[in-house]
Image (cartoon, rainbow, N blue to C red; front, side, top):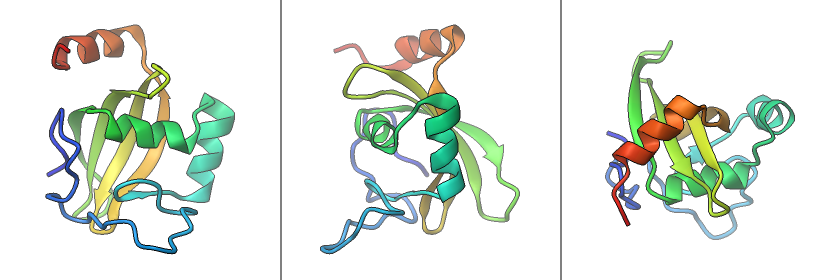
Amino acid sequence: MPPKFGSDDFSEYEGYEEPQEGDTGDERIGPGLNWKPQYVEKLAEKHGVETHEVQEVFLNSPYIVPRGRGHVLGEDKFVALGKTDGGRLLLVVYLQQAEGLLIISARDMMPKERRLFEAKRPSS
């Protein structure tokens, strides 16, 4: 299971690994977030989203929506709706894999997605 809404404890889902001393951060940023270079390039060029913003979404209590099975057995697809530290509202698409979460895409939320996020997140 992915982290629950409002949780910052990623240790209870399959694939979580604590960052290790000496990690370069090239392919793993944050708790179990994995990247392919072509996806990172697409995030920046097409959507103007930086990897640190995706990490912030996961650390700031995202609303997680299951989106079905991935193309590979054992991989499930999810969407995370969340906010960056700078207040940007992002939708992040990812696959849950044995090695952690593979980030596929991220973009600004559409109005309908913003309304869903605002309605589902706990009031502060």
